[in-house]
Image 1 (tube, rainbow, N blue to C red):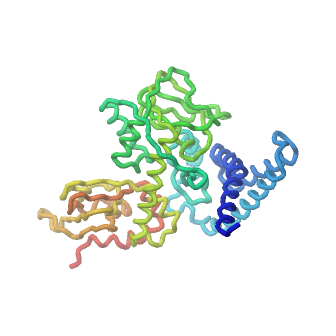
Image 2: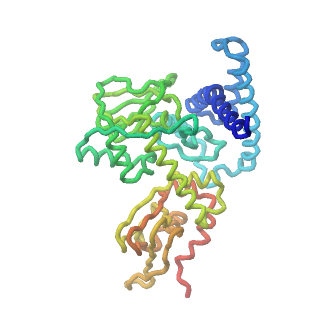
Length: 422
């Protein structure tokens, strides 16, 4: 056997082993983590694996498990223990400064727990955090393609819709983080692929624990989200809301039950279209923007995780005409901008009553709009497009404050750039 044949055979054996032995354990583990949302995921995972090991050794429900499978669990426990030690080592120095940028006190803990449960149900993308905080929820679980899992040609389904329906659907999807990565053509494809489904009152649309085969957008009506063991409605969703995407996004079982409260019209998107269009677009956007951010001096000292997190949160804004106003001097600031394509100029009123003067040109990689967010002051200058076909990346205020904490000092020091030297 040649060296190449040996490597190929070895790689194939590894893939088969992972698919048959490791993936079932990891999928069950991740499902439990998503359902429980423990404060310390590492400890929870170790405990869960230990309990599974005891079950296997005790000959319980899985008494027919092979010695090889048992050894797989033990190996996974060992790896997780090592990983936990690494995470604890990284986490320890940061304990004193975890909430340095605005501690809201312990009174908010219960509300935050409620919000976490709602996130599980509705699938609003959770606020990115460091891996040791919310590990299993920090990245999308991608489909794996390769020599033994061929990616076949894909033709999305098409369901006829009126122009009015298309516009309403588009307006709803554009509000969702998940669909913000789609360009016009991709958005049109997704809209056409949505299939209308009408359900009567008290129809169980999603069953907790089932495999997820589609996600839903509510056209009219409302639904309630509940969990086994929780004696209350976690969330009520109405027209314009998206639900059911978590199972597709993370490749995990359904996290909650969803029941219609009244006659409800839904738009249904199947798993394959979601994976091929939405997840692929998100991954492409992340990589493209992360590569771009590496060239922006402001972000050069950030690690890969921080950069990817910012890339996920960026939204692109298009300005086709020159001299289009992006922000206006004196307005309340709610966004931070980075120039992706084209140029913009900043104009400032230097003498009251006189015409604003150009004080700065923003080219590709330059950023603006940070001053109002850092200092909570009105916009210091008006910024307009200087060329046609300008594309800007933007972060809204809340995301800006959350993600750019590490570089806020740099932004404060550079805030003087809008001042005109005498």
